[in-house]
Length: 97
Image (cartoon, rainbow, N blue to C red; front, side, top):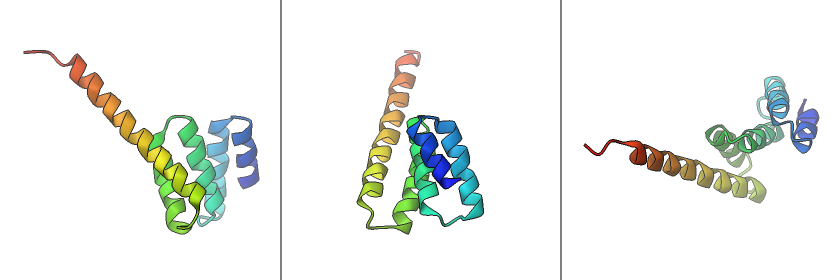
């Protein structure tokens, strides 16, 4: 499942990549690459909070992985930007009363 998840990511079939990563994690919950691939799929689909959770798990399991740290930071930035954008929209649509 893990290798197929990677292939699905490369072909931009992100939902299938996430499903395969989930199956891989059911078999081996400590398989780091499955967390990374599921996070990458979620990030590509704009599910930043789910991706952030998995990138954080990868960083905890392999603290010296520079690529994982970079992806974590990128994802954290996207989560903050999405929250900011949501706050702006709600302020713009609020009544002036």
